[in-house]
Length: 245
Image (cartoon, rainbow, N blue to C red; front, side, top):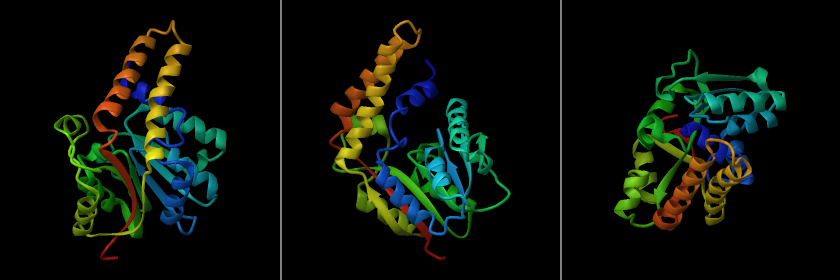
């Protein structure tokens, strides 16, 4: 079963492909888009959930999304057509790290996709290249809530604790102007949605050749979450401005 398809099916019943609820997403977009007529870019947009929410609530907004997943981009396009916002959305199927637009953006998003750039600071370096004067970045990434086990680091990669994460961002020339630390409820809701949605799909399609693999993927993910990182991993979303203006 294609990994991109597993991810798409697993995220079908959660409002966003990250551990944030609807109110958290709305508040972050409000801080990232104060005017309502901005040009927005999402690097690693997946199914376009952030962009679709921004476009639906702001009729003067224009948006572009970049992702390597054909499945996710097709989902984003269908959703945009249902919402009637497709004329203000441009989707690019390519590596977000190689994206080279001809203009800047007022808000650059990368939430839960910093792995595409090799980590948080490389993600911010890429976002900076795309910013128009006065622009903002909305980035979301993991952090360690307490000392991680070697198994957790092997599974999820190199994060730091939250104060160190903010120190590194500030030292890199950014000024945090708003943020959200995902609650335990948001984190658990996300993981239950991921594993439960994929499990339900497999049970509802027992004759599908991908059904058994989907059940295995859901069980493995649930086991890793509960046994390896549930009590260790946090998630922070930040609205940033360049400290030099």
